[in-house]
Image (cartoon, rainbow, N blue to C red; front, side, top):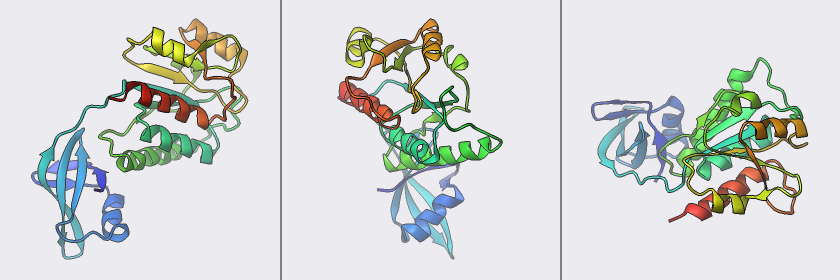
Length: 236
């Protein structure tokens, strides 16, 4: 069943974005009384499609139970990347259950954010919303404004850096020894990696460098790997 996120609820009617109404009518070609699910303020509703002349309206039928997320909150800190890689990470991390994503400009980041920052954030949020609908989530992960590693250092939780240095702790061992965290914060470096000085600064801020194994992965592969491990680890 198709799922959407509502923007308002008025009596027995759910208000959706214009783009979602277009999707219902033109892309999915839904008919009178077809059913959809709508999430509004993290509550889930079964709704039906109704046509008034040529306009689509969404009528609430009943509220549904929302199953709690089995995975603990995960905050993903990623470098600002080229469009295709950035889109891929935002989409797949959302599908795999990330709670928050923080884009950061790092020293070896190829892409630098310019005056188009607001348009980029709008586009990234749209990608995450659509990925949440596709994966049947009841929240859209929170996308932070582009920030710095200095701001990331102040976050609270179990804080790790995906490091390529030798003799670092393994991700597996860390999860086994520090299993009582409330929130996991994961820093992923850009294509050229996190610089030694950046890593040292994060370590001073309480981050723990971990290795993901002997293989050196592309930057867009790392979040998928880490979130897949966490899904396996905490799946009921």
